[in-house]
Amino acid sequence: MDKPPSFQPLSDAEINALVDGQVNAAERGALEARLAHDAAARERLTTWQAQREALRGLHRELLDEPLPPSLLDAAHRMGDARQRGERWWRWGGLAAGVLLAFGAGWLAHGQWTDPAQTGLLARSPAAALPAFARDAALAHAVYSPEKRHPVEVAAADQEHLVQWLSRRTGRPLKVPDLQAQGYALVGGRLLPGEAGARAQFMFQNAEGQRLTLYLGAVDANPPGAPGGANRETAFRFAPEGPVPAFYWVDQGFGYALSGPLSREALMALAEAVYQQL
Image (tube, rainbow, N blue to C red; front, side):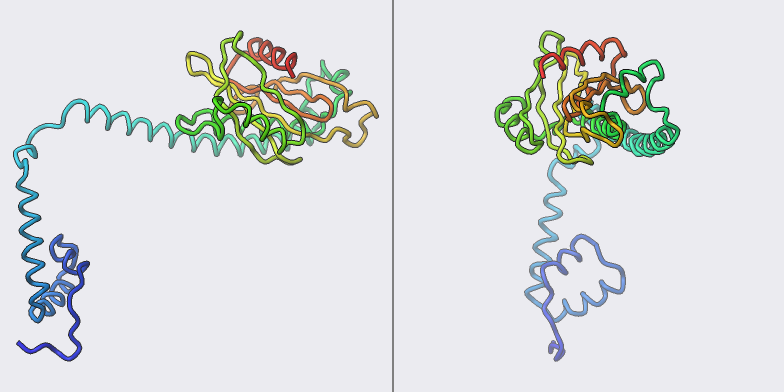
């Protein structure tokens, strides 16, 4: 049979599409018309169809057997994990929006601070802290659930981690030792912040519960602050958000310890951290 003047041999992709049935009726008709003039393509098509049938015949009896319990269990676990992840991210997005809206309204009315602590907090550079604490809580919510990549640099490389984050935040950092409180260092990461780079250290106890210490420079002398304000320290509790946190400022540097703990337990850990920094 003579080939048409515009004839083009079938490509491997087109032959594969015929073998796998991945073409509609019109496309199949066009390919088969070209196939009639392409002996080499017909030979490849016949060979590949035979290989496919041979592969299908291997262990055909297994197709009718039930799935092993181990595979079913693994599939269920993956499905549950995916659903939890989807719920987490939906909640996380909502929480972020609520936090932003809540923080704006709260600050607009000047009600972020506890009136009982007004005297103490007025002596600290508090103007930059609400946003700082919010960012710390959101960073905890994003990274603490991670199983494979909770940190950028693991605790095994602690010396490099501290040097790197110290250089990026512009201040020598120290990782507090919380072994006595039951928490071991997981590692840390670098994060962006409103006033520059932020560092996050993550800790975990034997039950898998995680804490994060978020730190970085804040405005040490906001408008209206007295001259010595940047040397004052004030602990403040933030129960709102994904997790509660204690945060404070010391010499122009902010710290926030976040975790799913009671106020008393988190305060004890915050004091242990402060004593070591």
